[in-house]
Image 1 (tube, one colour):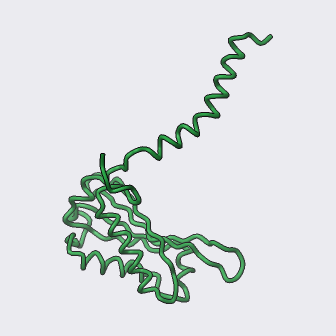
Image 2 (cartoon, rainbow, N blue to C red):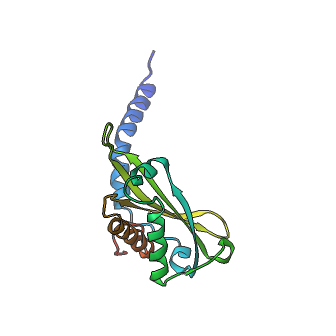
Length: 172
């Protein structure tokens, strides 16, 4: 036999389950942007680590450029920026910037198209925790130099921002 209390609890559970995703979606979009960790904004010395390319990214680059072209472009951009001193070892740095190129196939069949990204993990030298990650789409075309420059610029601009990438710049 179903008691009135049991029926009420079932109805409240159902209402709570159905209503909570809608409430959560509104609340998340209204939240202020998360600030970048202080270490990311104040670092003076960085060590650049090349984590390479994943298998799909290697295929995406196969006929266009050397898979290290993206890291070489990133290295040159960080060097010319002048904001960070580059160190020879991780122990000498404030942060480790781990650079990696990843890709996923967009289409099946021939020719396969890939969605390629430049990924940057910012690692605290002392704690070895990843403080933040940045990702920028990379259009892999026959103009690879221009493509890499544009994607690297997006990564660097994200690092220099006091708020999370894509977040509004104004603070309340």
